[in-house]
Image 1 (cartoon, rainbow, N blue to C red):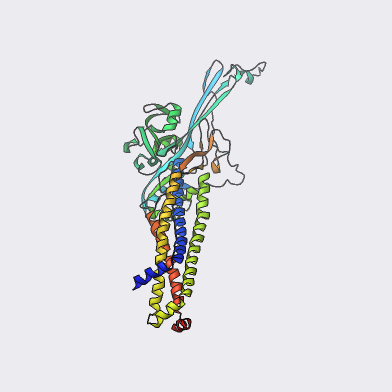
Image 2: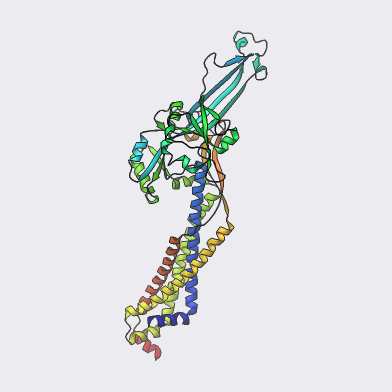
Length: 490
């Protein structure tokens, strides 16, 4: 009886069924497309962060940059080179000076290495490793013979110099160095790279003078496996070449060396720059971050979601558009679809006054009438849901076929070729030698994934809309009295 009556009412009231189903379908399709595009934008942000920071990790622990004290000049803490009297090699009136320094990247605070032990005691931490971010800066130059000027003989220019007439020439070259714990390779910067040639670090490499190079840097410098590179006046053998797992990207550093060797050469024994943490599951990341913040109140604890706020470019615009306009538009359209379903259902109940009055007169209970109206509305909602899912999937397919390209970059101050980064809070002075304020800009093709959970939620919303409309319409129908049907007949 229920099914027969249901089919008859839906077919006899096609206009109402079509309008309610189409309204619900539009809302459901929009919800599916917006959620899918939002997921695609999040994936794109993660890709950009991986290319910029070169880190495959869940949570990152770093030191907190302290504000300059009163009277302290920010941004003036670059490398200082000091040469003793008589330093360098003098030949033909020219003194050649050369000095290499390995130091913590200016503006990057360090943590005590014991912090790693604290991190590993936090529940939900699967693995963790510490690294030390450094900059190797080499100063080289040629000075003329100044002895004549010191003796008071200033009748002519001092002899020597790069031009033979008292001129001076100076070169400042820098590259980034990352100290890596060979025992902790399962998490951290090297998890976001692939081996191009040679080998990566092994458990017995602690304390050794070996290096792994970023492929782009190795190509620029003409280095390969078996070559040597000088770091802090120490010769290192290149044992491996790595490249980023993402296209058009760079890795976290130009050069990787064992952590303890890096600490020793930089004079930073027991100090690290970052601790990379892998959570036991994706669901535990938020709790792990909260627990780490409690355990390390003086440190900065960040996740990929936190770093996503630093992504700029058209990717940032797309993210803002989806998270604000797209979400609110979906809510508004969904609310409008629910309202249309409710209003049409109430209107239909009003037109069926004689019908419901007669049914009550022959013995139908209020519950049966409410169930009948609710059943009709739920079916209308389901029809709209099915159509909406189909339209939403077509919309996702169109987005993926178009494949809009978004550009994204994240600010990161680092040493560039031929220079050193400025010091002080915030990464140093703009315009410091070789400073790069943006580590990479990456173009990402937006791909909207199809998520089964979102589709199920969308169908659930369609059923909810039909249930609300049916419940309100059924309640109104149940309030009708049999006498009204008799009045209508009379």
